[in-house]
Amino acid sequence: MKILKGISLFVLCPLLLLGLGFYAGVESSHFFNPGEQGGESSSAGEPVSEQTVPTEQEEQESGEPESMMDDSFDYGIVSEESGEEAEAEEVLLFPETLCVDTEYVLEETDILNHTVVETIWRLPDKYVGMNREQFLQAMEVYEAFPPLTEMERGFVSLEVLAFSRERVVVQMNYKFVQPSSSFYLAVYDNNVIVYLEDMKTVYIETDIRLDTLPEKLQQDIMEMMWIENEEKLYSFLENYSS
Image (cartoon, rainbow, N blue to C red; front, side):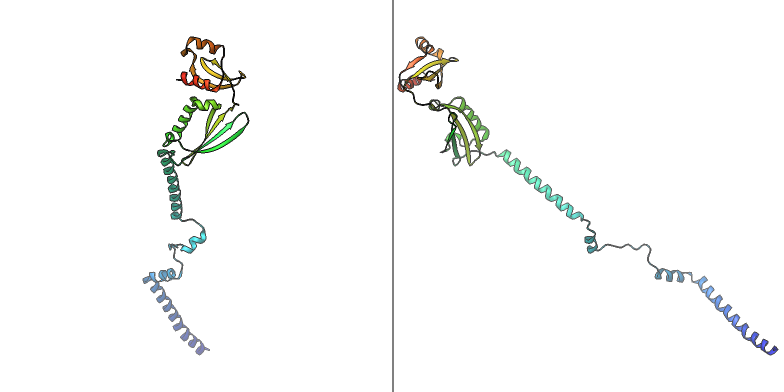
């Protein structure tokens, strides 16, 4: 029994000393080399401050528009708007004008019978080169002072319906009257007017002033002077028209 105890103590003591020595060695290595453990743990773990850069495919899948696309689209709008403004400025600087090739369309309207006759003429030379404003002014003068031949036809008024370099349309309004074998001269607002033989229908409104005529003729016209035919009527108008 004593021999067994002696043997067990002899074996356990060296093992205990060996274990203490191994433990002391491990602790001393940690004390003198503390960075090795931190480096191993850092290499084994995930990086803390690493930044991920999205790929082109990920950007497309995210559906977010790129700034360059928006800029190019904006530039396109600006260029389109600037083009329209430039075109409008060009129209203002160079308005449409009539030329020798412009169609001159007359719509002769009978306002009593409600009929229209359209004819296409060569543009009169006096209108060539006119812009819209100038042409409208010329038509206002024509309407205020129509030729004698137009007055004889029963001209009443006119209206410009269309104006362009290619085509201009003028509506001429008439009160066409039937030919009369005799006429009457009368006065209205100091101007001489011509009636048909029914003494009611105005045939011509002249610009002849009553006070410019001889006194005897003035008296006859104030009493409605009779003109026996068209030839004598034209003779009177030619002699006293200004």
